[in-house]
Amino acid sequence: MDRPGTGTDRPGSAADRPASGGRRATAGGDRSAAVGRSVHPAAWWLWALGLGTAATRTTNPLLLAALLTTSAYVVVTCRPNTPWARSYSAFLHLALAVLLVRLVFVVLLGSPVPGTQVIVTLPEVPLPDWAQGIRLGGKVTAEGVLFALYDGLRLATLLVCVGAANSLASPSRLLKTLPGALYEAGVAVVVAMTFAPQLIADVQRLRAARRLRGRPDKGLRGLLQVGLPVLEGALERSVALAAAMDARGYGRTADVPAAVRRTTAALTVGGLLGVCAGTYGLLTAAGGGYGLPLLLAGVAAAVAGLRLGGRRSPRTRYRPDLWTPRACLVAASGVTVAALLTLASSVDPAALHPGVVPLTAPTLPLWPAAAVAVGLLPALLAPMGRPAPEDTEYREDIEEPS
Image (cartoon, rainbow, N blue to C red; front, side):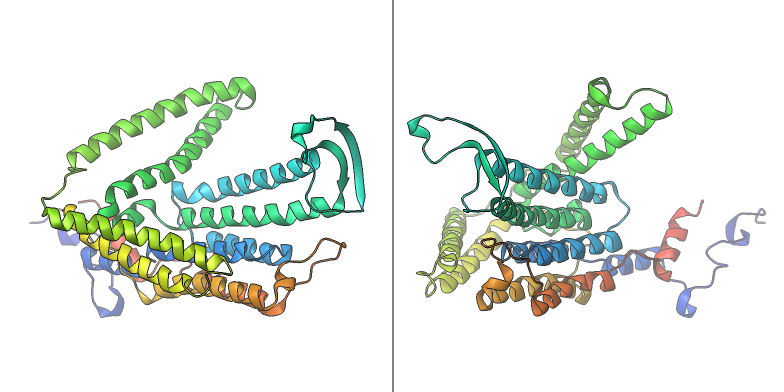
């Protein structure tokens, strides 16, 4: 005889809950469905790199502001509630610091852009003859400051786009999608990427704890007393990570024939050289004829080399991430923004690169702005809102006490 509150008589158990669609899905099936609905981490990186590529094609502050707004809205809408997802604010602070440093340099060292609108005249430091072309102080013109602002804003937008990818894509899931030949390098990159968000989370946690205890958390004293526990925690995590990697056989390789190893090295090195030469050809006017074919050939050779090199890494993937139609649309939206802004920079360069001599207000080109709006598609496809019924059932099943 079953005791009350145990077995199938337990109130509120999984057997008493109605399953969606007239059936009760198993926990494994629900989790597989949840994995299938999640966006591939490489899709988020392609989307973010597409926005970053678009940012490099323009210095129009209105378009750059539209790219910043697009990335921020998608991050707020789609990022999960994880420690590494909170690193977006750190990249925003880094982008602001880069912009301020660029402005300070143009004020102190001058600008290559000639200008007539003098804002302020600083005391100029005389330099020896061998430092011709460099000045310290002197006239600060509005044209030079505006040129530095446009240029710094472009770099800041690129950094923010990288921060968006780091906030949206899980580093551990991204590592699982790398080919076997890049597994060791991918582990190093992922560990480096996850260290900064974890460090920021530790600092915030320790500062909050010190404030609750009535101790100072700012200034040099607070920094010293917070820094030691943070470094101690980082050391403990590194030791735990090393033990986990050693227990899982990290670094083991399979025996492959010498001919395959030589072919792999030749294809990989040749492909990377072809990618570099093809990229240089695309960026220069003289290499417009051979740049694209050489780039495609280099990419094909590098991919073949990586596929062959993956034979040396005998590892399997548990529940691998799949390229769902939603992930393809997310990646395609970023690539579309990059392609349209690249096309716009060649069709109407004056609109994407407003002049500063003479001083004129930048205008917002309509169809490039509409192209930037395509980057908002992930906010409609993958919002982190109310979970689906299958996700809710899966969490209830695994949280139910036995």
